[in-house]
Image (cartoon, rainbow, N blue to C red; front, side, top):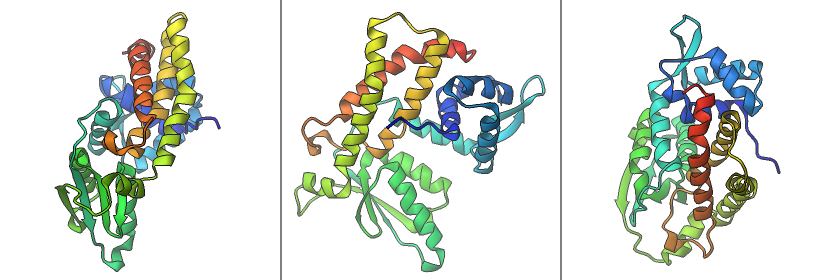
Length: 266
C-alpha cells in the first residue's frame, strides 16, 4: 500500500521542518511553491490552510511585502516543540510509568471522548476505564496537551512503578498492540530504506530532490514516535524493528534536511 500524504498533513510537516526558520510569517505564495514538489496543488494548499486556521494551528498575517501569509499560533508552536523531542531526538527512556486517571461527568461526555483520543494520540495505553498509562518521560508533553485543551480539571497524573501482579512485559502487551506497532515500523522501513540505500551508493541529491524527499519521509515518520511512545526495550519482543526504523529516519534526516533547506530559501 502506498504511503498516504494529505495536503493538510504535509503543511504541518513543512512548518515543523522548515516553516519555523522563516523570518516572519510564511507567504501563501511560498507555501504554494514549496508544497508543489510534494504533489500539492494551489487550491489544495489554500483549502488546507483555511482548515488549519479554523483549528487554531495557523494565524493569518502579512509578509514583509504586504502579501498574505500565515504564522504558527502559540499553541501550534508549543505542539511542534513538544514533537521535536520525539521526532528528532532519543529522549532517555524512563523506568517509571506515568498514569493518567480521569473522571468526566456524563453531561460533558464529549470531553471524555476528547480526553481518550488525545491520550491515545500521545501514545498512552489503556489499563482500565478511566486509567491510562505511558512511559514517564512523556509527562511534560502530556501536561502541555491537557493544559492546552483545558482538560486538567478532569485528570490526575501519577508517576511510579508497576508492582504486579502480571509480569510487566505481559501487561505491556495488553496495554499496547505491539504487533500493530511493529508492522508500522516495518512498513516505514519497506518504504524508506531503499531510498537510503540509493543515497548511500549514488550521487548526492539536488536541493529540490532533497527537499521533496525529506518532506515525504518526515511526513511518514512523525506519527510513529507517537504510536510507539518509547517503551522500555527490555519489555519489547526480540527483534523489535523500531530501533532500525529510527536509525533509517535519523540518517535520512542528516542527509536530506540541510540540503533541502536551500530549496526552501533558508
